[in-house]
Length: 109
Figure 1 (cartoon, rainbow, N blue to C red):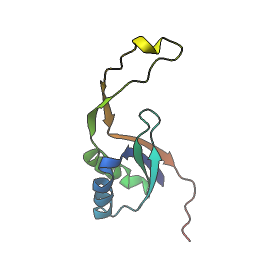
Figure 2: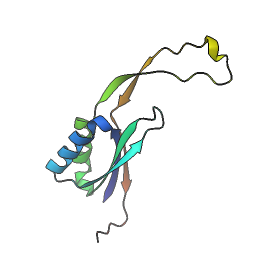
Figure 3: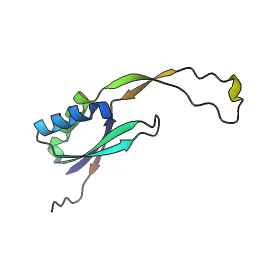
Figure 4: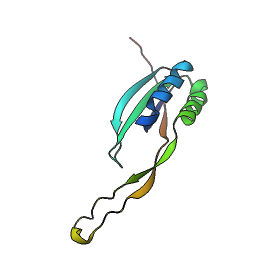
């Protein structure tokens, strides 16, 4: 048995949730916050048999896409902030960050 932990952007959450249900995967959905942009994420915890891991990963890959986003950089610490003009920078966000962990025991009460 494996535990899949997938951290995705909020924009992909409903689409992924629907796709997991359609493919008979049960998941726990948690609200989370990203450290880089301080933006909302959704973390899915999916417990599944070893033979279904590849299918779950494909569903995540098919439903979570990366996108470009403009962000304003934070002013430099300790420097002269008067002369600092923050220009928006385009960064790639989204997709999915996925961890697959072995599970020694699973209990459902």
